[in-house]
Length: 98
Image (cartoon, rainbow, N blue to C red):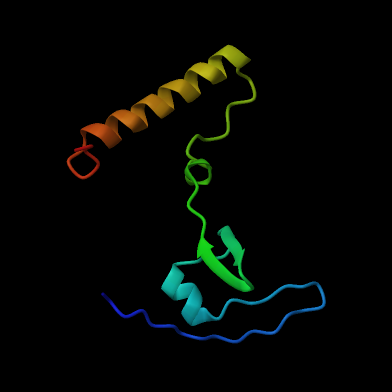
């Protein structure tokens, strides 16, 4: 059985209830500015981990639509763009689903 290790960090709580995650902890958890974290409370202990969101990972994938297009044209452009990205993802050697 592997022995778990604990690393302790300290941070103060602001008047608004905010804490700053120490830089070493952010690096360890790969937390960047604007990332979402999950905070769990279990038996008086807090756990923090980076949230993984498929929805957020897709933010900005499709460029802003041309305002001169109608809704059907915009919908077709979005569909085509998403379809093209999925084809590349599934057919490329590094993104191939095995």
